[in-house]
Length: 292
View 1 (cartoon, rainbow, N blue to C red):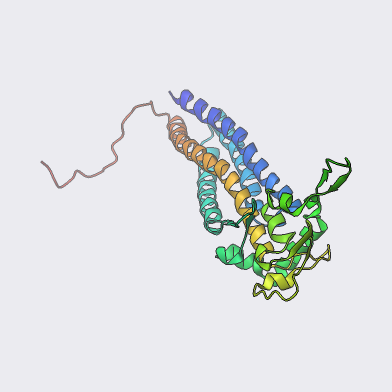
View 2: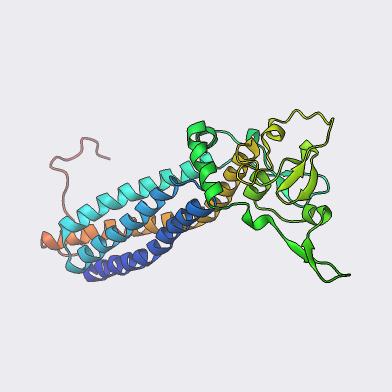
């Protein structure tokens, strides 16, 4: 029975080591998106650290179970408890900061539009911070976030490739960053020229500050608009909801491993104390005063 329990903890930790690979992969995937799409380079690091830590702890538990080293299992259980608590806190934090905010449906448009007022909390305040947003907007500009907006279609009469029409553009499915950063809000009423070039209508009064921020300069566009900040938040929320599924599965697996590890540690202590399995010990030195 002792050997069976320690073999079980060894096998379970080997599986946990394999499961930690997708967690690390999720952090690396978010890091890649941070460098090319979301441009938020701070929320992926806790996930990468947790993934690497789980790998190391799994090896500790595997070695402790195989060699029945009680001191290593003790360190393993303490580290596993810390990781479970940290992962739980991280999942709650990630859901809390990405809880609010969804795209707004616009009449006669297939794409959604995003407003900063729909988001709240710590993450919005951080993204909206002028100093931090300067870095994000620079990242979007240097990453050519709007370069993929241009599309050409073949003219059925001449067979020549021509830019898509306004009606065709309005039926496209745009990403949150493309919708928020690469075009002016629909409420501005600007005239479509191409995907990233819009002319204001003379005499049309608008009260949306983003309409003033819009520029046909391809290095400016709407990178300073609140809609662009909302688009970044929406993109981040979408990415984190995908990764959160892996985090929850990993948390459940770690809790199971922790429970099995506690049982293996108790068995290892019995071995150290030369106790027969199933032997009972008197833990009270004095009889209870209450007798029935």
